[in-house]
Length: 95
Image 1 (cartoon, rainbow, N blue to C red):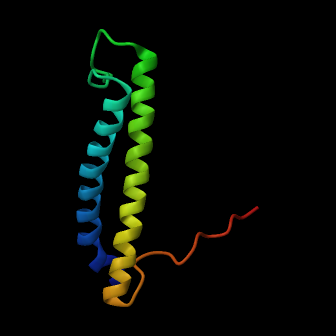
Image 2 (image 1 turned 90 degrees about the vertical axis):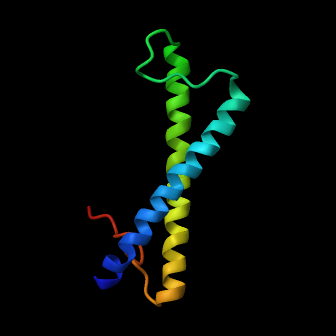
């Protein structure tokens, strides 16, 4: 329990880093797909299929980036503190 509490500031910092990195990665990839900025839901005159593709790509990139950085932060925390700040493995599904 204490490890989770101590890990919280690390988790917040890792989340911010993941957001910044995910945004940069998305911008780079979108720049290879289209020269215009990605359409956003609040834009009125957009291609809806293009918006859906942009949102799906952005979501996938953010999720991958967040997961990778969160796992890296947990491994680093374990290396320095000697304890894993989370569950050891997924809980088995109950039927």
